[in-house]
Image (tube, rainbow, N blue to C red):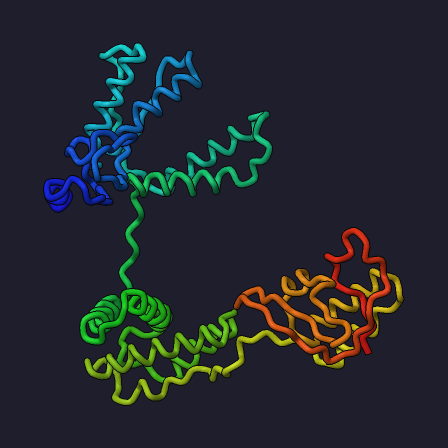
Length: 370
């Protein structure tokens, strides 16, 4: 192994390693975890040495406990080591050697069993005076139980019914991965979008060669009316074009079918949020009336946002020292791209007459804007 070879090769050059499944102490790479010594150090995910410490801390917190349970996955590589060290620590704390631990095999559990246990837990929570809220007790119990059972490989999920066109999807996925070289994410994305259409189509027709362009148009229109964005519909149309191009080569559908699939046109700035018109902005600025400091400050902030397109963080960081009232120029520190630059005012700035004593230099300057 390269770690041992590196240790044998030099005793002076610093070496940093990732131990992986290897125990760095047991393998002789380091003397101990807290004081490795020598020229080698690194990272280890091994946690077997934490078992005794956790048991000791638990005993300190609950000194009168007569039984302590330990959950251990026997399939872990260092499971036996963890168990042995925990048993030794338990005996040191005074546990009887014959009743130190009892091995319990977690059975395969169906989601319905977890749901039944969740209902029991929710009823128990309702009678618990310390429980401050129990509205989501059952759902959170199911969430935590499924994660725990899935981690230990003991969650038995019902097998999904086979999809009618599962073979076609499988061949399509292999084609994209092996012949087109698409990434696993792209393959999964195309297969997922195509599967949605084929599942819908399979409820109406048994044979793929009976598919028509009108079927695809109806499916995309239905999804668009059901809440899909234009972008989602367009991406789904692209996936279906790719699938039917492949289907044409396999003789699953008529030649030229893929060319007829058209998604909605996506405009260049379609995703850019629309803002108010300039007339609406002017109406907003005119609505801020008055001459007290709060009104002047509000009008200044709104003008900086509307006229110069500054970000809120850029406006909030402005101080009186950033403004050159004589030259009518102010300096902005940019939030995202960093740096700063001077901006010449396109409106008339008037030197503020408000009090500039303590705290005033941190305020956005009050000014008159024409």
